[in-house]
Amino acid sequence: MARWLMVLPPVLFAGLAGLFYSGMHRENPGELQSVFVGHPAPAVPATTLPGIPGLTEAELRSGKVTVVNFWATWCPPCRAEHPVLKKMAADGVRVAGVNIRDDDEKAVAYLAEEGNPFFAVASDPAMRGAIDWGVTAPPETFIVGGDGTVLFRFVGPLVGTDYEDRFVPELEKALAGQK
Image (cartoon, rainbow, N blue to C red; front, side, top):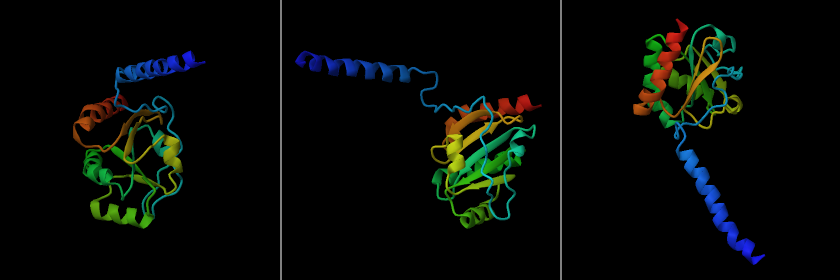
């Protein structure tokens, strides 16, 4: 029995080291994989923000590429990416929002003050819809094809070189495929 206990720690260490090694040598080690990429987008919450058009499932299958952004007013990175979302919308990209774990009045006031880049917004105060999408924390953004298929998932704010190196090319590819 004592010999078995002496062998167990090196075997466990070797197994764990192998797991870490293989994880570090994946194609994109920093990227969180989404089980939805290549599959139909999950349902969006049916609740909406007062006075703002709601996001529907039909909007995600409209034949046009849609960027779906999960955000909240209490989230500093969401505030940091807001100008990028406004620029996307000004450039003609369809940007939809899902406001999560937020107060509806604060969200409406924020969009009125800072500008509303979203053509439609769903409200998800309990984050049930976000969980269905696999969202871990805001901001997270998905590119959805015109047929409702999730094409890409981006975790974090849409700012900086990571955004420019990974998100922008995927959005350009999706938009080029739409024409």
